[in-house]
Length: 167
Image 1: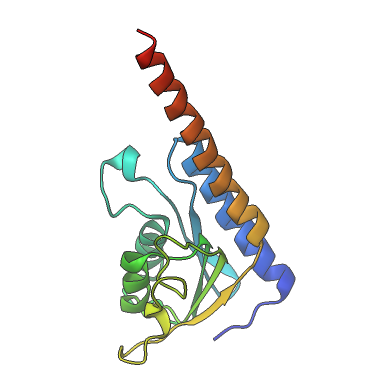
Image 2: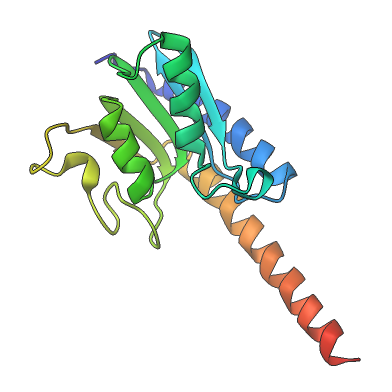
C-alpha cells in the first residue's frame, strides 16, 4: 500500500471536496470522492442520485466505476479511496468488493456511517477483505459543506411550510 504524506492526503481530499461541490451545484447531498493509484487520480465521483434518479449513484460508486474503466479491471489493488464523508453500508461493501486496500475520509457520518460510526464493515474480521481506514483529513471542511447543505435545506423546507400555511 502506498503511503501518502499529509500534504498529499490533503491535496487528494481537496480534490474530493471539488467533487462534493459538483453535487452541491446540482442540489445533491455534497459528497465527493477520488481514487488514487501511484499518486494519480484514476476515478472521480460525486453524489448524483437526484440527477440520475438512481439510488446507488453515490460518490464512491461513481469513482469506483470510473477507476474500473481506467484500470480495465474490477480489482482496484494498490489504490486509495479519498471521500469527504464516511462511506455508507452500500459503499463500504463496494469498496471491499473492488479490493481497494485503503480509505481516507474527512468527516464521520453518525447516521449512515459503515467505516467505524454505526458499523465497521471495512475492518470486519469475518469478511475476506479488510481495508485500512484513516479519518479526519480536512475534517472541518468536509463536515462544513454537509452542515451548510442541510441547514439550508431545513430553512428552505421551513419557508415552504410557512408559505403553504399562510394561504
